[in-house]
Image (cartoon, rainbow, N blue to C red; front, side, top):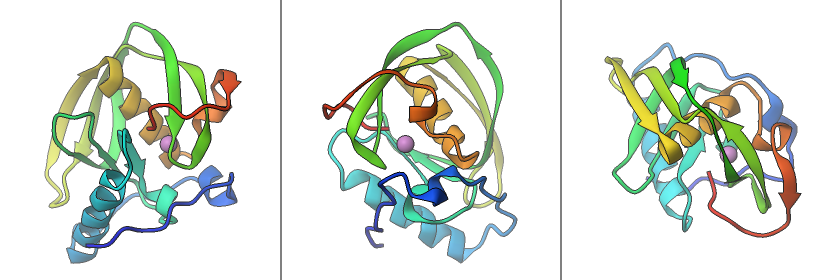
Length: 156
Ligand code: NI
């Protein structure tokens, strides 16, 4: 396992669409282990998407304090309600802003072995699903945030 370097400073890679994972192999496992270690190297970070470490693949790890969630080729298949609150990003460590997100999200994804599963989340977890899946489509929270502020807050 290794902590990877974070892509920051609005690098163009953060605005590119990621490709689907097609090989559920050892290479993917190493990537995901490294992403988890990288995520946990930051205080208060709740999620990391592969493009944030320079890998344009559809892979996400999330930890809202209830254990690590691994998502490969994730898709939002249902959403309900609205929440509006502060959001940040490890790739933009000095700003946060209020972002509107659904309050409930259902995700379809694969695990690192290629097994399909569905997962539901509300509040912070729903927000994390949306934020990280946006990353896979080259969308960052700054594209959606209102009232940007230069203070460190919870990072997603
Ligand atoms: Ni982010």
